[in-house]
Every structure is written in structure tokens, then in C-alpha cells.
Length: 244
Image (cartoon, rainbow, N blue to C red; front, side):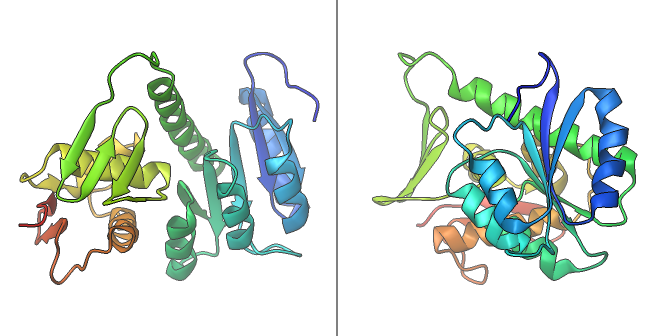
């Protein structure tokens, strides 16, 4: 892949709709993006995980020839935490839920406006930059660890361990877990969690936060009906409680 001009954002779009790819490129390139398109699942995986790949973000469609978007995302996540914005069929909640659980950072319906696409891209890129800055702190700095029962959350290393088992979390899931752990015993509203974890102004009724909590509970081995770690507080939000 040829390097982009300094200061430009390198974006990989994996979508078999060539017309849409051209539309996105024509809109984003004057705004500082260099857009490269891949039109099949296997090609997308190859480009996304190439040894010399230097993408800042990926736009990934669910419906792709060769491999569907979920399988493409799984293979990308096995190698990289690069921000991934998934495109889903309009109103298809199943696609959104599966995408977020597999590791997507955000999602958009295929009927998106270019302005919304730009806003979402900028949001996930800001989050990624903040995460990178945290990870690049001095190696000699003492780690900051939060302990809740058998759960240990290392804020500097951005890692979490349940007893002796490392948890495989998406960047959003880690930020969500860290936010709840920091506020152990206090209710965090959906709105505050969205502001902290997604770096974007969401509608307070946006249900994506519930999807992330559901995925996080599964990885913690938690039960929403009898929670040991994350309790739902009706009409308010969520609270980290910790096992008694």
C-alpha cells in the first residue's frame, strides 16, 4: 500500500457496492481522508491485516462476497484493535447487536448521510487517539489497577483479568468496564457512560449501550437477573457492585 500524504487519515472501506465506495471517497477525500476500497471479504481481510497496513479506521459492510462482514471483523480483531465502523441493513437490530459483540466500534445503517458518516468516523478516531496516548505513557509509570472481587482492571495496560483468565474486550467494552469499576457502588447513567466510552453526544435513549453491557456481562460470566458485577438500575443506568 502506498503511504498517504503526511497528516491525512488512511481509511479502508470494505464494501462490494462500488458506487457507494466512490461516493464516500469523493466526499471524504477533500476533508483529509485517503480512501482505499476492497470489494470482497477475503480481499478486505488481506488488506486490513497486511504487515505494512497503516489504516486509521475501517468501514465494513455486513453483506460481502466470499466472507461476510462478521467473519471479516473476527479475523481483523484477532490481529488488530483498529476502529471499525460497520454498515448494516436499515432497521436490522440483529446485525447491529452481532457486530458490536464481535468487536465493532460503531455502526451505521446503509441509508446513512455523508455528514453522519463523517461525524461517526471522527468520533471513533478521537477515541482511538485517546487510547493510543494512554498506552504510550512512560513504561516506568506505576500501573493503575482497579480490583472488584476476582476482577482486576489495569487502566494503563488497558487489560482486564477475571481470576486468572484474561478477558478479550473491545476498546469500547474496556472503557465501559473501567468507567463502571471506577464508580463502584455508584449508578452510572447511560448518558454518562456513552459520553465517557464513545466520545460522542448520543441521545440518552440510544440502546447501543445496552448491547455493550450485555456483551460485557457475558465475558464476565455475569447474570443480569442475579448480577455479581454489573447491576441494572431501573430507569437510571448501571452500577458495578462486586460480589459479596
